[in-house]
Amino acid sequence: MPKITFQETKEFLEKIDSNDNVLIVHHNDGDGFASGIILYDWCVYKGAKVDEVAYSSNASNIDKFQISEYNKVIICDINYVRFNLIADRFSEKQKVFFTDHSRIGDLPEYILVLDETNKGYVPTSKTIYELIETKPWLALSGLIEDSGDIYPENKEFVEEILNKYEMSIEEFKEKVARKITNTILHFKNDYPEAFKLIQKINSIEEISSLEKYSKLIEYEMNNQMISLENNLEIIEDIYFYKYTTESPYAKQIDTKMGIKNENIFCVFEYPRDEKDIVHMTARYQYENADLISLFEKSLMGLEETNIRGYPKAVSIHIKKENVEKFKANLIKNFIQH
Ligand SMILES: [Mn+2]
Image (tube, rainbow, N blue to C red; front, side, top):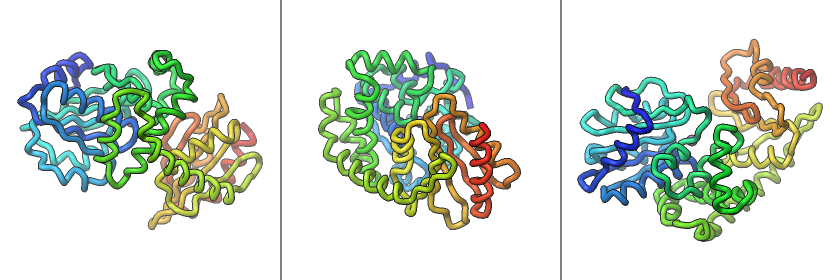
């Protein structure tokens, strides 16, 4: 897989023209939609024919497309492991471009890869914005969806865009980013509709057209937060929350609860799956929080676990029979730290 530079990516995009039929495959979250829309606008501007599809791990959306009809394919904000699950649908007869902000491992030989991970934690929508420079409000919303605003490498970018709109980060999250995320969540069974609605927005003022979808999601999330509060157990200053049912908004709810419980260590337990694997996440807004080492220490000696995340937000998978032992370790290690 040839790695290409930022400048070569610019040239690749510049060469798109009216002879091209482009398919954009983007992640199904806020960062992916933002990246996909900015690229889509670019292809339209260059006179190309363009289609888009949201993808996470279910290939059924992709399989609705006659992929060989596209001479160019752009894949953005999709983890390379997930992309490899669908890679056989593409071929070296096409020009296939790939970029993502998590570590990029092996991909098929013919794919052109832009890997900017050496710049730090840079969500894809920021990279795409720097290539194309349109819809800054959308790029910032995408970056916020992936919590890019808490990393110093994005500080300048965040401030520049906030200054443009004369908004604080809180105000921007409330009035812009959240509405975009909620609209995507609302149309989780009809992503093309979400894409169309967000794509046609051309200014920050027009975001209010998403309010009606956003409100419905806010309402549902609030109800789920109330039911979480009813399943709260506090042990040694740690808040343990338990989801009783699967929630499509769990990621957003965890973040909201983390913000609401400022400086409280919050741990969330999700319903177990059919293999009795339990998914747990945690949020801790405390400025010196180091959840990765706290969790690593607490998982020591427990088999078949994996941990992903950042200092203030982690996610783990653990076998059901290890949950109680893990929680005891966590409490002990948290008190000591
Ligand atoms: Mn992303």
